[in-house]
Every structure is written in structure tokens, then in C-alpha cells.
Length: 240
Image: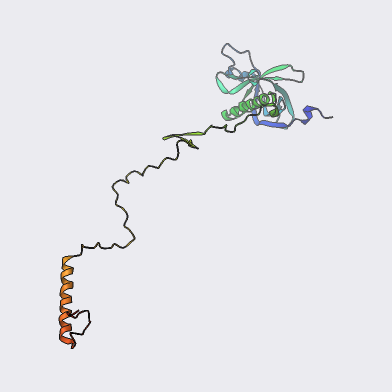
């Protein structure tokens, strides 16, 4: 049967080929001073950081690929790595061996961005460990909550610049009439599609005078032309 360590997934967090190792002299009251490490240079090569479960393995390899040394980081990263007060590119790191014996050594980088990536990789390892250490929450054990609206409850929306409105008005309030749009007062009514009819008794006097003259003229023409005036029943005969 496979153990839990064999089933854990490895994750490479950092890989860089220009890493310097130093022997760390005793720290002062201000902390570690990187400028004092140059006289204690030990080795330069490649460094790998691989996370597996709750352990983080730091391996130092030579240019030919052989392992120069390795150690482990377990637990709180901030307790096992310290920065120098005079440089952000140098760190004092405490590694553990297979027997949990610690060894303090100095690590340095020429590039400031690489030093930042190194620190972030260790912080990422610590966050993963803290997340895995949290107890799992059984969702089925949580009490069920009823989010349905009870009788008489209403949903109120609050919007900027708009008065609070309710989805369903109360039955006693009824439906309110909408106010006319602004600027609608004083507007002319639209023209009617029905043809206008003239009212009786309001015809033009000039039109009445013209009609009378035309009738008289037609009567005179009829008198001159008609040979049976007494028995004529034409509308223009004066004997109707």
C-alpha cells in the first residue's frame, strides 16, 4: 500500500543557475550584514526549490549537474529565512537535513528581480501549507437556510438618484396614474383626421349675394327662351 508521501505531488517553485553560497558570520544587533559575507564565499551554482506536501526541498547543483548539497524548509518560512539590512539580494537561510539538524548559510543573487522571485516562491509554499492544514468543512452539516419570501414581505431596491421602489404595491394603494412628461403643458392638440364641417347660419355674406345674382340671371335667361312660361315647371321659371 502506498504511503501519503508517495502520492503527494511535487511542484517546482524556483530554479536559477547563478546562486552564491556564503558562510554566515554572527549577526549584529541590527541583523545580518551582506557586505561582511564577501570574505566568506563558498560556492556558486544552480539552486532548485521543489515543494512536496508540507516540505520544501532546496537543492544546490554544480554546473555538471551533480548535487552539491540540499536541505529542507518545514513550517513557518519567516522563521527560517532572514533578509540582510544592507541588501535585498542576500538572505540568511536555515535548512534542515534528514535528521532535522539545522544549518545556517548565506544565499546571494546578482539580480534584484531574481532575489524577489526567490522570496515569493517560499511565501507561496507557506500559503499552500497553511491552506492544507485547515480542517475540511462538511457542507452537509451546515443548517439549511430558507431564503424564500414570507407572506407580506417585499423586496426593496435602493438605487442612486431614484426613490426606493417596491416590486408589488399594496392592494389598498391601487395603481397610481403616471404624471405627464415634463414640458407637455401648453402644447397644441394634434390636428383631427375628420374633415371640418361648416356650421349653419355662419356662411359668408359675399357667397350669399353671389348665389342670389346667379339665380336671378338664370331666371331671366329662362324667361327669354321658354315659350310656355305659364305651364313651365323648370326650377328657373318665376311661376313656380
